[in-house]
Length: 146
Image 1 (cartoon, rainbow, N blue to C red):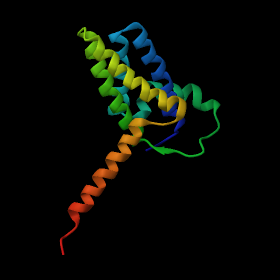
Image 2: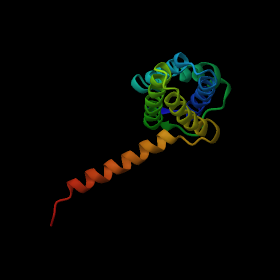
Image 3: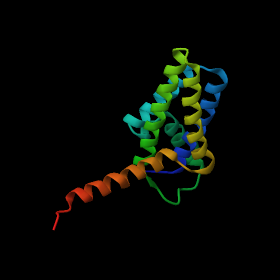
Image 4: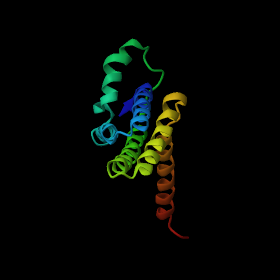
């Protein structure tokens, strides 16, 4: 599936705002809600992600068509990485291990901010590196010794 690359950047912008609010308030419930957003995007796909739906209905109709589309797999993987950090952060806040909640939230915020402001998707880059590494491993295992 191909996606408009502006959609994940919009989602990263909204995520950045939510994660700043989590750090300011220390609300584990707000971080848990963000984890649900990440989970929907990860397990159901970007087309069902709440922020993606807002982009599709309210933002995209006001923009020119995208110059190019991108594969949905890297941003979907990035949502999964965000989910892990949000779950760890939620557990930290909910159990009183505030340093863990703050640390996990801050790392997720850094990644979301990089995507929203600079268009650099850290999770997407991780996905591409993993694909490259696993592809080389598979190719080397297929070679037959001479």
